[in-house]
Image 1 (cartoon, rainbow, N blue to C red):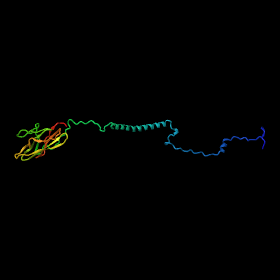
Image 2 (cartoon, rainbow, N blue to C red):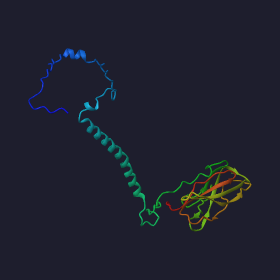
Image 3 (spheres, one colour):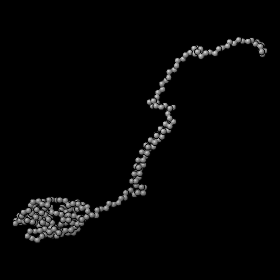
Image 4 (cartoon, helix red, strand yellow):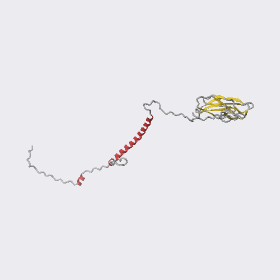
Amino acid sequence: MVPAEPLGTGYAIDIPKLEPATPAAVASSAPVLPRPHPIARPRRDGGGIGPAERPAWLIPAAVAAVVIILLGIVGVVVLPRLGAGNNVASVTPSAHATGTPKGSPSASPTGGGLQTVPTYAPATAAPVSKLQICTQASPCSIPGGSPESATTCDLGSSCRVEVAIYFTAVQKSVPVAYTLKFFDRCSGQTTDLPGTRTTTPATGWIVAIPTDHLAVSIPGGVRSGALVAVTQQPGVAASPPLMLGSESC
C-alpha cells in the first residue's frame, strides 16, 4: 500500500497543446456518405392541392353542400308521400262509418229522354202507296165516301184501331193483311200486336179498311208509346206512328 501524498506535493506532467482542427481537415478525415435520392410522392386528385395547402374554408363549404343535397333528396321523397297519405285519408271511411257509402241519388229525368220510334218498313211498297191510322186528328180520306176516323186509343184504357191501306192501282181479289207494333218510347222495347186481314172484291178496291174498330191490347205500365201499322200483303209498308201517352218518361 502506497502512503497518501500530502497536499501540495506531486510531479508536474507535460500535457501537449492540441491545435483546433480546420474545416478542411475535418472534411478530409470524415467519410463521405452517399446522398439519398428524393422519393417521389403520388399526387392526390390528379395534381390537386394537398391537405396542407387546402384553404381553411374548403371543408366546411363541402360539408354544407352535402347537407343541402341531402335535404333536397329528403324533401323530394317525403313530400309526395305526405301528399299520397292525404289522398288516402280523404277517401278512407272513419271508424264510425256503417260500411255503406252515402251518395246523393241521381234524379230521374222528368222531361225528355224519349227514344225515336224505329222505322219498321218503308212508307210505300208497291202496290201499297200509303198506310194510315185513321184518327180524329188525321182522318183517312175515302174516294167517293166520307173520311174515316174511328180510331180511339189511349194508354191505360181500351184501344180500337182503324187502318186504311191505299193502293197504286185497283186491287181485284187480292189478299190484304197488316199487323201492329207498339213501341215503348221510354224503354225502347217493341211489342208485336195482332192485326187483321181481308181480300179485296173481284170488282177491286183502291183503298181498303180491313176491319172497323179493331180491338187492341196495349201493354200496361207504359208512360209514353207509339203505335205503328205494318202491312204484310200485298206489300210491306209502315204507317206514320200514332203517339200515345205523355211526352216525358
